[in-house]
Amino acid sequence: KQLFKAYQNAASNIPPIQKETIIWTASPHIGITSKQAHPSFKPLGPKGSNLFGWQYGIEAKTCNIDTNLFSDKLIPYTW
Image (cartoon, rainbow, N blue to C red; front, side, top):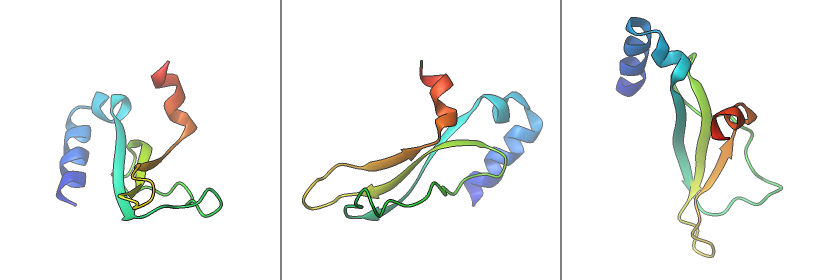
């Protein structure tokens, strides 16, 4: 929560921070999530932020690849 407060304080003092900063958050669970059982895009981050990425899975035994979801709002920033 301290990080959220720091972000919100900075964004209120320097308005371009909120508009120009993209946030990719992590709140992972250990293990594999199947395609059918993937979570809905509900990352936790500062209110009003451009929270476009969410890492939700790590350290699976059979496939040690982190899993992430991204909002389509990220696309204009990637190309």
